[in-house]
Image 1: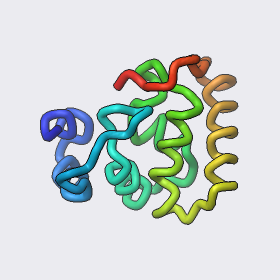
Image 2: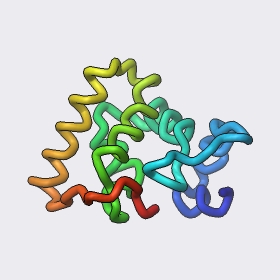
Image 3: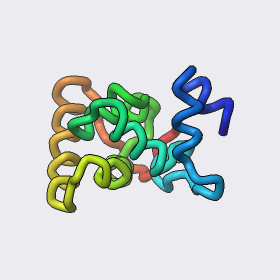
Image 4: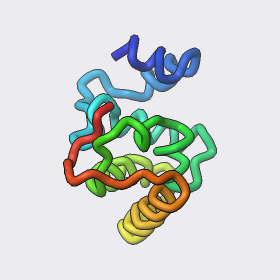
Length: 116
């Protein structure tokens, strides 16, 4: 996990690793990512929308295998620090799907696990 975080975040990896509990399990639909990791990014990296997480703070949108389940899981991980309720999570997922399709030509796959 340490090497992956160093590759992903460089010098910021130390802070992100510190935010992830030792016994944390990776997300089901975005393997290799952890809820605490995404929550930390949401809290410290000026995240406003889900699209900020999947496009600007991670490469989740571009590694293939992304699905509605992936986006929902990522949004739920970021929801706490951002103060999102379930309605806001759903809106962020819908908005992100639209942006990915129209602006980036990324179509969600029928599979339910991202290849990260």
